[in-house]
Image (cartoon, rainbow, N blue to C red; front, side):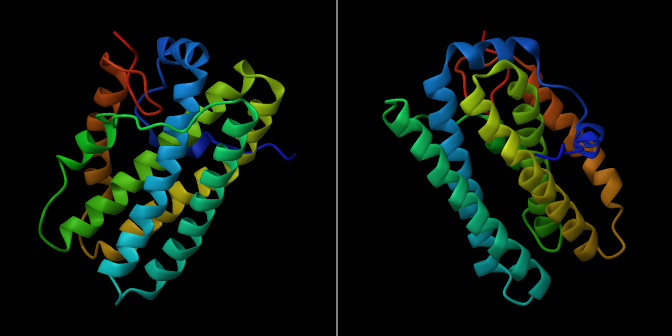
Length: 203
């Protein structure tokens, strides 16, 4: 499999995933996979919601339709891996990560759409970065699967970011991205009470 250059993802993010989170991921494989499945399902839902809300934007509709299909396919793949490993898909509480980012989003248009797309870019970028950090540490089966996700996750990050720039008009998107980069770095660096795919390092 051809290597995926994730340097644009790394450059976009303001910090790396803490090593303590990686250690916790290895100790909590069932939760890692369950919450990964949840993340894929939520990503598909976000894309579909954008399609329903912004029917007047053809480029967004096409990219979100493709993204939703890919995320649901990833959801199915995670479920299959869980079944192979005897891991039951149970209800988990959500991480504070996505909600913490959304707290800073504007509520009126066009700023609302721009912020939704920027937040989507950060969620996809962080997912890609964490997959890449985990690959060398996992068993061959799971490492191969996570390696296979790097290309799509990095593309999803770029799709969200390019759409934000496309619909921003005269707004300085880079300045807004820089603001969210700080919020995002704080969320992944601060200790969390529970381990989740997008949590900070556990207390």
